[in-house]
Length: 172
Image (cartoon, rainbow, N blue to C red):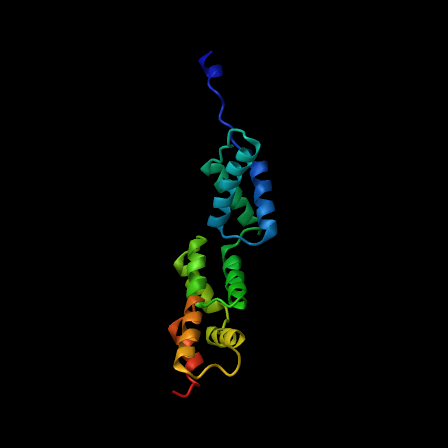
């Protein structure tokens, strides 16, 4: 009798969690850690929206879904990292910013270093293009204006070597 009086925990099913994972991964690539976080949050949000008791996502079930996604090619941290680097560099962000964002998305430092080496992005050229797009060509020669360019490129996450390469052609 005491077994019936205790409410059964509302544990989400494998198929339901897998469906959520497919919907999330159908939008764009995610890192493993990012997908795990989103799957945990989706159960909370669904319960809040329906004003019900939240479904419990067990670690075992979460790992099972993540492993299934990885084994079937839906989830790949290497692919995610390479695409993320390409995307962020096209949007005008520097290598420091990209590294920081990847770390925040759960990619380990070693994987970031490998992907940064393998991805052929000329960060100096990106910095120069961004500076020209923002400040026009030719770039300013006045020190005050150069300082603005420097601060702007730093705020976008470019390394000091990349920023210096933009200024090498300046006459002081």
